Amino acid sequence: MEQRVQALDAKFLAAQIAAETAAPLTFVPDLDQLAAFRLLVHAEIEDFLELKAKESLNAARAKIATPGCNLWELQEIFVVAVILGRSLTIGSPFDRAKLLANMDACIGAALDEVSKNNGIKSESFFMLAGFAGKAIDQFPSLSVSLTSYGKTRGDVAHKSVARVSTILAPSAESAEVKSVLEGLKAFFYGP
Image (tube, rainbow, N blue to C red):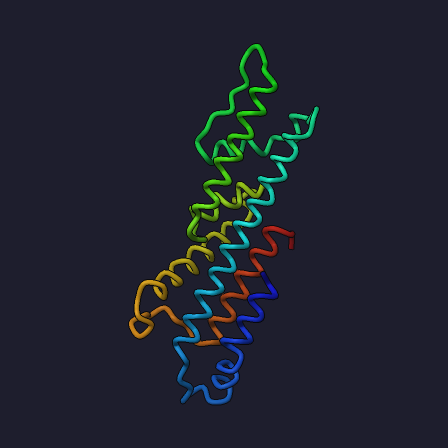
């Protein structure tokens, strides 16, 4: 994702940032280029979050399919169930096959939710991060950044660019995206 966003920055912003830097008082931004950048970056972030969720869910599904899998290693599925509002009760007498089938169904439901996802704002981020096995309370500022970016993307996606008031200067657009990417990198891969 980072390389793709860098390519988008080079394609849509680099020339504008150079022009902005050279003549800050007379610079007139290309709003269509800025809007395209914002929309495409939003799509890259959304795709990244969805891929991380699917990766984790499919890994859990693979563990379930492993004969003799250790139930202790499937704890993350209980978190997935909580996010979905589902119950994974362990009955008495214990029925391992039934529990594993319920876990697999839970993962299937989670994958279905990922396929229906449409955004990066808090609700989507909490769901996708949880499905990816991440503790969302570790980086509360990332949720705020993603929600803000999602809202500004919405402005561009649903209005004429001429009527959008949230478009920033090219240098500010670039800086905002770099900040979001750094937050995502720290969240998923550590500082």
